[in-house]
Length: 248
Image (cartoon, helix red, strand yellow):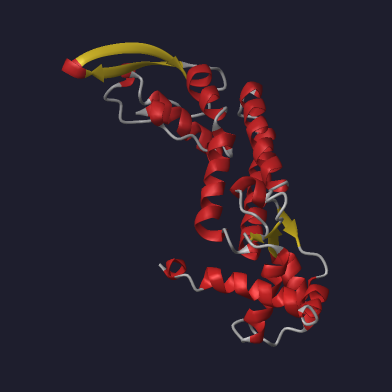
């Protein structure tokens, strides 16, 4: 069914592609039923209509006049940016969600392709101005999306892992994991501190909000001289981590 056809920007990127689209639409004209050749040999710039036959239950037939430009093209064009951006997001989610370099490369390649087809369409002499304007608006929305792509805004993934631990307990946990070689011990104190600052947040006891860790290296070093605080924190961690339900 022509009305369910998924329109693509490539349908407009060359005169031959656009002619194929016009002939595909014209082939559904009931007046051309049985015709085994293309209706048009060259692009028709003016709008044209077909008589479209629909068959419903009990073999009930209805006929409606549908214009190529106003009824078929424009409504579908106006949804192209939304559907394309959705496909881009799906592709990123499937293949590049956690791979920054591959995601960036995919976005760059896609942006280059969209810009290329944008240049072709705005210079297309075989398209009516109303069609060019509609396509330009859709393409510019996609270009804007790709040029200003915000990973966290689009996928709602936090940049840092948020622990439901206070700052002391989180720092003690990191200290013990490293001390017991569960975390690679080859990190320098400075590098280990930077990684904690970059990827982890603790939970504020008073506000229950998540807070960045500042001067993590100093926090780790200070623990060595805070015996009472350290032992209390270890006791809290043991209570949580030794509970059998934690491992179920």
